[in-house]
Length: 86
Image 1 (tube, rainbow, N blue to C red):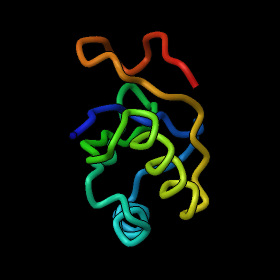
Image 2 (cartoon, rainbow, N blue to C red):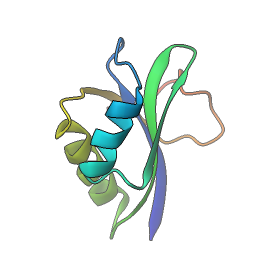
Image 3 (tube, rainbow, N blue to C red):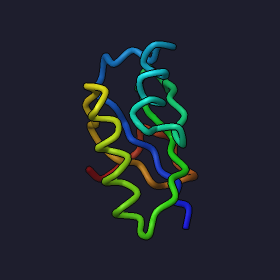
Image 4 (cartoon, rainbow, N blue to C red):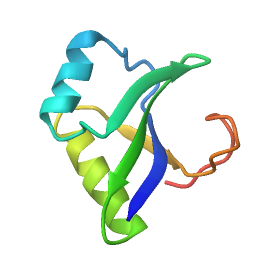
């Protein structure tokens, strides 16, 4: 099953082409990095057996690059800056 969610990165993380390449190499080829109102994030469409497995594997892959995940956003219709868990 595919799960869609956003991982919000630590404030100040600059989304560069180099970082995008590192994320891809770390296993985030199913994620799209970006910035929303100055907040860095990665939108994932991850295949896994469960939502928890998808989130855990995505966080682990992002952390391989040295990035810090601040929180999770799984509400599709809300702006990235709305409430999230994590």
